[in-house]
Image (tube, rainbow over all chains, first blue to last red; front, side, top):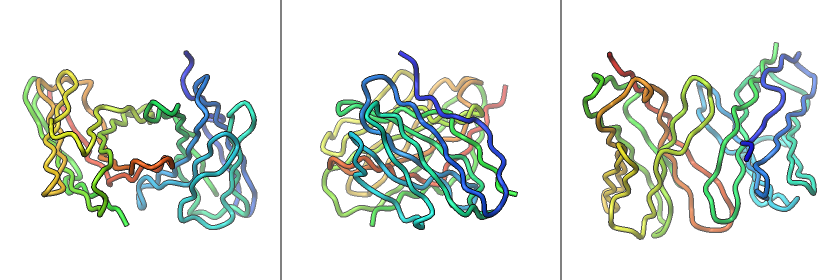
Amino acid sequence: KAGVTQTPRYLIKTRGQQVTLSCSPISGHRSVSWYQQTPGQGLQFLFEYFSETQRNKGNFPGRFSGRQFSNSRSEMNVSTLELGDSALYLCASRDLNTEAFFGQGTRLTVV
Amino acid sequence: AQTVTQSQPEMSVQEAETVTLSCTYDTSESDYYLFWYKQPPSRQMILVIRQEAYKQQNATENRFSVNFQKAAKSFSLKISDSQLGDAAMYFCAYRRTDSSYKLIFGSGTRLLVRP
């Protein structure tokens, strides 16, 4: 089985722009969750989607949003980018009977 | 709120020796899961070992084992016969047992392996 695929791997954006990151889960996995990793704040939970419904949301501003499609692929969007949004964004997928499998992340740099 | 604390920013071990990484956590839940994840330079988080809180027996996976002390809320990882490939960031993590899947991570410990 293919693993969790995140695209793009690297991204450079300008302050004020918006960005969309994509995550394709392992085939058959219906849950996708997103995490932000920064040197200062560490790994923080953003949100989780299961069967196209958001089940849980972390403590992030409304500029961070996500969605999940019927094929379980997920996207997260960050609007009005700030320098502090520079981070590694990790996606993880799981089935009901497994723990999370992570992708290799998208490195976002905001300049 | 649940918290996870790793007090060792960096540890070093000689190849073939044993090293123990420490983790403490705080929760009011009686049932939960604890994990150790490894993050090599490739950045992908890899699950090393999982412990279910209701199980008293410590989990083991080949060279990796844990010392789970529920009353003390302590969860340490022991790596035996350390290998160069074990060098990575190690994160301790917690999650509740309810249907929502949310991992709470510690700040991580960088493990260096000396040849």
